[in-house]
Image 1: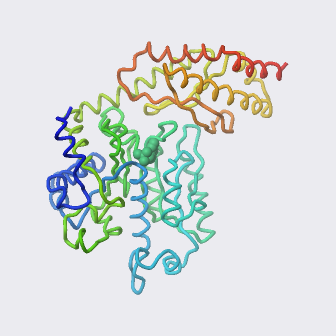
Image 2: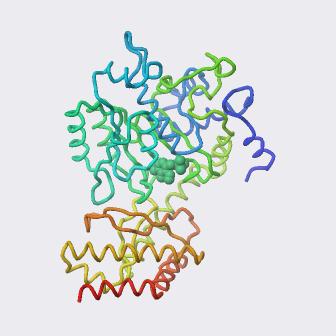
Image 3: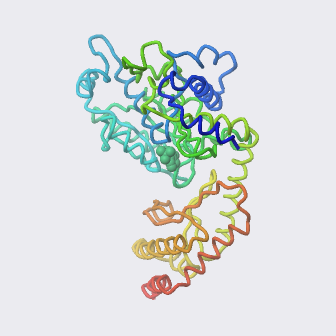
Length: 436
Ligand SMILES: Cc1ncc(COP(=O)(O)O)c(C=O)c1O
């Protein structure tokens, strides 16, 4: 796609300071502006004062969604505890004095139970504490439950804990669902907290005229994470966070004497990482070569492929669809028709026992499939509304538009063949034995 020499040049730049990235510093700022525009849809007049303004940052480039999420919450935290009167800000005075200054006992981040584990790392690193990462219950479609958000908020306030941020997910890692972002934007405004959207996976859905509406409300987020190495199909190591307010990142600005001097254009003054390669070139190449229309096609086909696979699973007597695809991710499990009949009439306790055995079946099945190396699905554990308990499910991500119907049905065929192996039949027999 790119001449090798150009690619090597990009990867050998060091984007932390302008001396080592004379062309790439403005290029990275331009790419961040392109992504900012995709999310916030500001008009032409908005960008010229900000794109190359060293005092501002439309976003921060980083190695991936984890760092992007941490950066977003870092900005939120430092803005919540900004310098005020005698208090010189959390960045200078630290957490203890910051809490005393605000008269609270802690701060919290609210995210659904489907939130990526990077928020746990952020809570730990930023001094929030993993206990104050509130994992809010989800509804039957793996979206954050709005009533539960309110309940958790009240519980926090009663305990004198300030909500730092409410996080919406646009494309949950395990199931590809999208939280109700408009509602979360309203709640964030009501609570007076930062609204972050983790669109690491689903952000590029904004390229699709047909599916963009799923992310309505994202433009009201204070910060948005997008991973280019996911659905922008560029190589690993390209994450971004964009900020609605181009001056928000002032809250994490830092300087050093030998680089990142005051007034310099060094990108490192607004990033968590130091030395970084010029991955922005690859994102720029993707946006120029694949382009809006190309990404729209990739997104639309991925969603269509996932729906087709879901329909195949629903029609197959020996599989159970455990989450409907909203984007291009779905989950399901092997559950033979005889066991499905048992489950339909079983008591809650019996269901639980059967599910424990089915968990082992799915685990073994996925392991044998991975070892055979012909087709691959991952697995996870989810609480589904049908059983109201965590079960083991197979997870499929349909990100290759060339995945044909034949490939999809061959995955199910192979899984049925594997399920006929002695160790799995043995487990399944235990279920029927239990029920007789
Ligand atoms: C929704 C979401 N957020 C954040 C991340 C973390 O991204 P990375 O692995 O690039 O750090 C992922 C990765 O799977 C993700 O799915």
